[in-house]
Image (cartoon, rainbow, N blue to C red; front, side, top):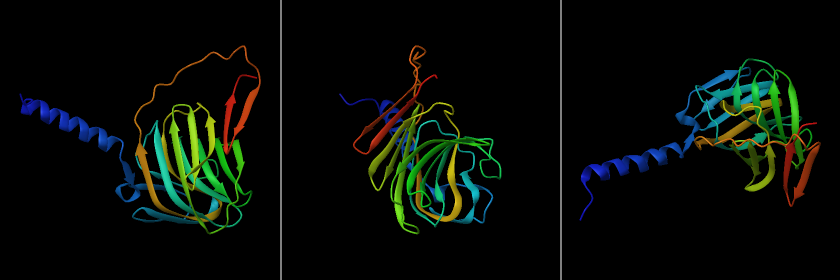
Length: 219
């Protein structure tokens, strides 16, 4: 017996809805809001002049769990990358609350940090970044997890839960940059589990191959 047509319609709608939720949304499908700098937005490709903390975010974006990808060329003497779970956005070096992951030509590193009108560096992972050369940067943020890939190799795995949702965008610090093929995937909502580490003091840093995991526990 064939299933009723109404049931088939509901199943089809559910499958399409799931696919749309988890499909990568290219940058040309978005409206961008700039915070400092002379940004150029051309489809999925974006660029900005050198400056201190110039940002551009997807207007109205609010993601808890997401994947961001782009081919990024960073100028000399600075870094460029993604901001995510951002709020309280303004013009200024660290004028937002949220996270940042970027490629640094100044320090030859993959940088992960947290901002709240100031800067807290979480990770600086050694990685040679040649100025004005494109690298494919991929970020997956899910719950407390922050994972970073460069040229399809995972280089950073970190944990932090100060900010759990917010806007997504692009940022430069101290240099110019070009961001091509920018895309973001909304991975939906992830349940956040709570654990009691009150009896554990200190920090754990466990390098495994090229992946570093950092847990910040109560001091």
